[in-house]
Length: 155
Image 1 (cartoon, one colour):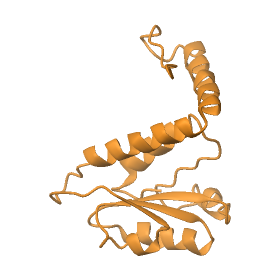
Image 2 (cartoon, one colour):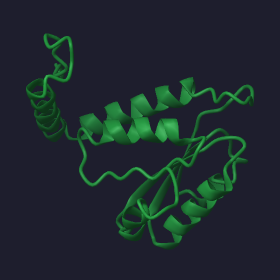
Image 3 (cartoon, helix red, strand yellow):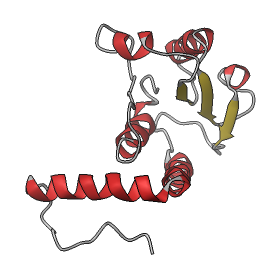
Image 4 (cartoon, rainbow, N blue to C red):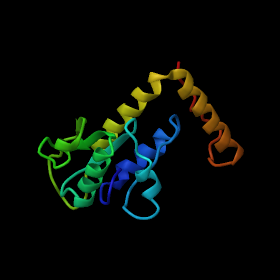
């Protein structure tokens, strides 16, 4: 979950996580479109929540709602002083040197890449199978210009 302006890393993480995990839902706003995903949260649900300065109040409120429903919260933020920190079960930090109007997501993207690779290798067989299914789908849809690049390289 990433409420604007924190939605770019949430969208990236959700998009890539969907390649090798099922039942991944992206929440970037609170409206009728996101109600089913929020309403279906159960005690075995895991929510990855992003919050960076200036810390959107709706992000904190949604994290609190998910926590009250029993979800395990993984928080990704810049500091232990973030309003998100006290709500999370697991806190991952991507410190910011400067706070500006342009969010510096380089460090967050590196952290997400590491998490995704780690999750992929937790179940290599399943990850490889889903990645092959994705690759087959995009090749059949003629999605990419360079079709000769093999993304299935787990050696």
